[in-house]
Amino acid sequence: MKCVVCGTAGNFKNLFSLRDRVFAVEGSFDFLRCPSCAAVIINPQLSGDALMAHYPSTYHEDYTQRYESLSAKKGVMNKVRAFLKFGTLAQFFGYGRRRWFLFFLWPLVYEFAQYPRFVRGGKLFEVGSGTGAFLKLMDELGWDVYGCDISPSACAVAASMGLRNISCGPFDSAAHPQGFFDAVVLYHVLEHLPDPHAAIRGFWDLLKPGGELVMSLPNTGGLTARMFGKNWIGYEAPRHLVSYNPRNLRLVLEKNGFAVERVITNSALGGIVDSIELILGKKRSSLVFLHKAARAMKFFLDPFADFFKIGDQLVIRARKPVGREMP
Ligand SMILES: [Zn+2]
Image (cartoon, rainbow, N blue to C red):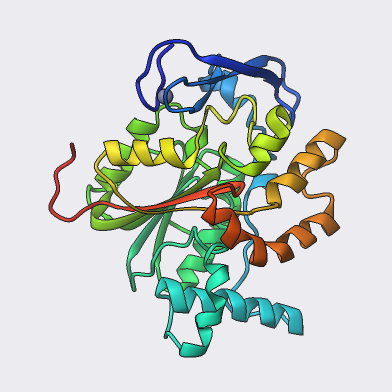
């Protein structure tokens, strides 16, 4: 076997075997770790219809974000949350005027680390756009938004929200002109793709010189992954074909010419609650109180989790350099 991340052939360590714990489709899958770069790779890797059987039409219901409109809902707490979110986006991500008193929001930079830096009227492409929650908000904030998703039911929801530029099907870099986008974002998608280098080259083609690539994904180097091992929520058989840590993800991007600006780890406790749900056989997000507590703690814990790079989620922000050919 050859590592799809670093190219090393040789003695992969067999970590454990898992079945599909979310949809209980037949089959057992080995999780192997590359001796050189520590990427965790599933074997055997399904493709085509066999893999699609593990993506039932309800898949997106548990895995896409909820749409939160720019105009805050009623209630004091919702107004406070909207102020914290859009204040952080304005102060640190270019979505509005910076004000000196918003500086205290800096711990929330970790919470919103997956937001691309704002480009007014810029073109934004989300690979794996799901029901379009993120793109809908980005549209309201002033981006010209595009997306793609393999789930027909998720695409139908996105279309019903008025998002017109979403293609239903796998990512295809040839579907748009080269150098078309100011930003490409992926929210928990790269780990579902069999060949990271081919995908990253596709994103390179789509981006303008100076354009930004932002990806978030589970962190195999995080505290939760180490604590829970095979019971970690991030080891999702057989959909997470390749799982990454901050080092090997940076390697993939740099090998393909991207300038990595930041590698952030966040969601310090989120994965712990998800993993407990998995062990107890509970439905995802059913331990509502624990999720709320974990969310509240993130404000204090994420800066530490990032300092030690042990957060449950990994966010990488990179740019296609201006005036550099692809290596
Ligand atoms: Zn490797």
